[in-house]
Image (cartoon, rainbow, N blue to C red; front, side):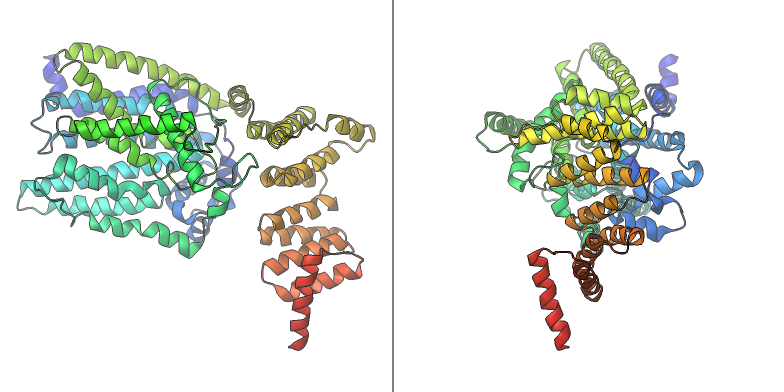
Length: 600
């Protein structure tokens, strides 16, 4: 009787089970604070303040328009109450898990899978694949870290587009008179467009169709390209949007966060061989999760860790191809994992070489692999043993997710955890320093900033601390603003512009009438090619002191590089009249402009 009940209410049981377990393990995340990039994307982002101003939302980040539209929706109803943002993120995660279950259910009904032995337990396997996807602790970064909604929401659209595509193809093969398959297909195309405007990682979607077709749908010798081609056309929207809007600074993407050199595509690729192996370890045994890994960059292919990782990954891919004929679901799971990692783990350099949220979409492949391999190891016979093993795994993953969410509840707790796990990385100390600034704990802030600088200098082979200088500054009665100015200048010198800018802004907040911070910040923005902001800061300095030669010179330089030559010439003249001795190179440029201007 109980068995009959489950058969009749299977779908309701699956959805209810996923919801209840998901809600329990994420119940302690709904009050978690905003963190790090949430500041620029949400709390300080004026573009999402008016949900009707679609132009502002588009201009903020065109290729992630849908993501920021949802943030605007959250802000419209909840302002900066974190509960609404977390509720939305949880709903996205739950729906993604349900879509994983639906995709597996559809896959087991394809012509190439429905007669396989594993399909006899398709309901059980589909449920556990979705369950592992839902409860795995590595997913917390994409779910609990609010701004990483870009990843989880893009995954939801990715899964929905693929599922609708598969459904349309299955209906086509049934050859019914009805054209209902067209509605599923058109729906898949529309969702694909939403996916690519949610996050750029969905660029692999058409290639996933190319893998799925021969794995489960191909009934002829050749792949039917006709239904796939429109998705490749849709794919072109990403590079076209990037080109037209000029919204991506590829050079800045490659700059290492530790104020290091720009990473080359080759070194990034070599590093990713190790990173992918690290990802695999985190998937199977998710221990010591870290927000900000201190990961070594590969310098040569012949380095033992790099070479060993490369060979290990090649072996996995060879095994996947060898197993395809007999264990196509297992092979597909491996192909899924590698394909969905490609946008962020290939030759396209990104300044952060490793982040846990990048595993959110590849987790689908891991979940399918884990359940399938356990099924085959149990030799298709001992299903009770299989269920027991999977229940134990869920019982390991679910509490780990709940516990990891405690780390995300408070920013200081999360930073302390990160510093404990990455004690030789500067960025966590910088982030904690700014948190201490907000908490008005200047001494702790200075200590963290100094530690960050020391780590930077160590990488350059220099031992340096300004502790004695800080004490001398405090003795003069100048206070911490003078210390922060010193720190900001030093951060700027080593190329850590973001940290320097935030420190200068803090000085301005403490003393809005102080001119030097505005001058320094305008120079900093100029160095980092943010000329509009450089102009704004130089103007502020001139408002405070119209006779500041340095401020007029900074304004002149910013105007020049912003192609406003007449204004550049005007303020250069003022700066020199006020006694400023300009840089010879820039002075020569202005002199050339002066001559051309005189000729005209």
